[in-house]
Image (spheres, helix red, strand yellow):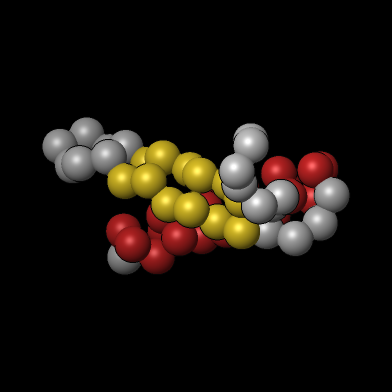
Length: 51
């Protein structure tokens, strides 16, 4: 996206009865690696917040 540094990814999290959260991640690597790494990090963050 123009104006954003390569590797910047935004993820939104929504749970029933709670407000939607948006997190910004900056991941290094090629497009495929960025996609995989951000999924792992987002899921880990979501689990940590729920515990």
